Image 1 (tube, helix red, strand yellow):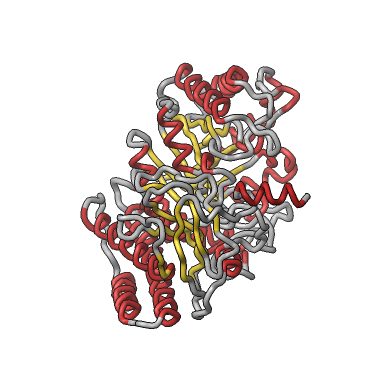
Image 2 (image 1 turned 60 degrees about the vertical axis):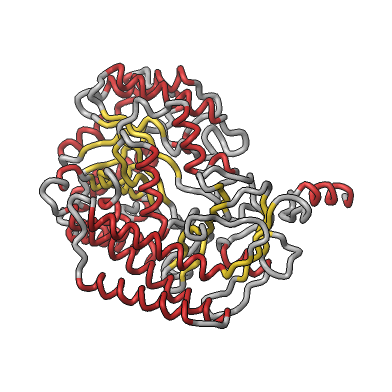
Length: 514
């Protein structure tokens, strides 16, 4: 057993690193109260509530072109303070989850003003995070004021927040003692986060009310495959849908194991009545051919194309938008233990998209990606490295719309929402974009990364629903979106009541002019 441990230690598999190889960045980091973080304290500070030793630490390192430089960067647990090590000698950009006091976890970037970090450098992490986020915030503010249509018209509250942000950065720069500097930079980061969120929601609201952009937007909810288990509740569910203000529904077709291909008319009986009722309510449908959690381990491109074709032909003239790839970079498609390879996933997705276009080129094809970077189990599954490889295969050639699925309790987003969607738009210049499925904490006890309050999941859900529904309108080439994943349990529960979350959703749409 000791020999095995020594082998794993030498290989870096236990989270330690060989100090004689690769590069190292020496980190001073403090909590928002000014307490210095040890190596172990740092891991707890940036980790989820249910952090496990040996799991992903959330840190992601790329070269300055965005290519991962190490499968899993290592935090040296033997060092007296956090020391980040990676293979090679390239200068790097670093991103990681970071708790913003009074706000929640954001996925933040540090890059030394675009120059990157090299071997042997020593940084005050709180400073690097605040200054990089401030620079990015200013960059996207200038863009929204200049090149956007309609341009952002900042309100009085935002202008006050922006001024306070600038003053907070100045105060932090003037401090000379590290603990004090760190506390002041943390306060500045809080101001940046507030101002950025205000800008995104306010600009989203202006876009939603603009006569030229408003008709392009979608206000969605999700009816997942569990809908078939609640047939007696359908009348109540559709009544809640009518009251919700949603004009789109993501309708997930069940696995249907007795007829996976949907080759028999009997497989459509329940869904025919659902589709008819949604049409009666004037709600448009995004048909999800196969949700990511339903992909079977024996799926082939041929069976995926055949299933897609049967669904599309049956609902021709009734469903005009089809999700042919769900969370394509997820690590669980085909099964958590033995998932399908990326090659098999891409082949099935490409065939499904081509099948839709073969039947009717005017039908809309949709694919969604799952947001994660350092929280992904491998660098290859992280959103942008995976997407770049898929683009190299021209995998999105038959896709009209790409959605990003965001679950902040599993993989923080926060202040990265703006940069991430802009990067998505740059990589996919021909596709429209949208916020896909999103949600927060399926249970009341939070096991992941907190937002707003670690002990109040319900308030966090409401805050994120408001923020993301508005902000989704203000992303590049966006059709809005935001299909709350747990609609059936958290908005339309089996007891028939209208939950507070459903009421918040309706009030948010009213604020946005829906």
